[in-house]
Image (cartoon, rainbow, N blue to C red; front, side, top):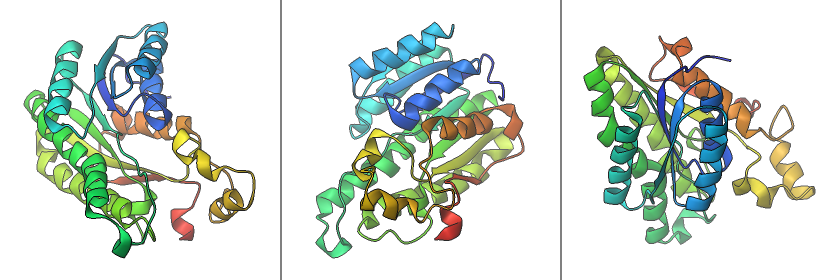
Length: 252
C-alpha cells in the first residue's frame, strides 16, 4: 500500500461508508486524520479506530449545508493538525429520485449545495494553505452519475458532473503552485446509502446486471484509490478522473 506517512489529511463525510473507509485507511498508511461529519457519536467511533492505529484523530462536527459553520470547522481541523496535506471532499449524497420536470427547486438547490457547493467551500478555505506551502493533494468525490445521463436524478448527476469540471479547473489553476487536484468516481458501492437497492431480488439484479464484474464495490476499494491519489505515488497526476466502478462506466 502507498505510504502517507505523517501526512495531515482532512476527510469530510467521514462518519460512515466511503468517508470512514478512507479515513481509517489513511491512518493505516501513516497519516493523521481530521474527520468531519454531522454525527458526533459515529465520528467518535472513527476517531477511536484511528487512534488505535497509533495516529492522531481530530473530530469536527458540522453540516456542510451551513457554509459558515463548515468553513469554521475546516479551519479548526487544519489548525489542530498543524496544517493540511490532503483534503478529501467526500460529503455528499442524494435523497430522492424523480423526473426533472417534477423536481421541486428546493430539492435541486439542496442537492447542489450538498454535493457541489460543499466542495467549493472546502477548497476556498484550505486550498490557499496548500498553495502557500507549495504542496498538497485535493481529492473530490464525484460519481459515475456525473459522466452520463442520470434519469430521475438530474439534480445529482448535474452536481457530480460539475464536480468533475470544477476539479479540472482547480487542477490547472493550482498545478504551478505544487498542488494536485483529482476526482475519484465510485460506482455502486456497498454502503448504507445503497442498502435499499440490495434486496437480493429483482432490484439488485437489475443494478448489478449493468456492472461487468457483477458485484458491489467495497468502501475499502475506494479507499485504496484515495490513498493512491493522496500519496506521492500519484505525484505527476492532476486534473484527472479516477473511476472505480467494476466496469460500469464502460458498459453505459
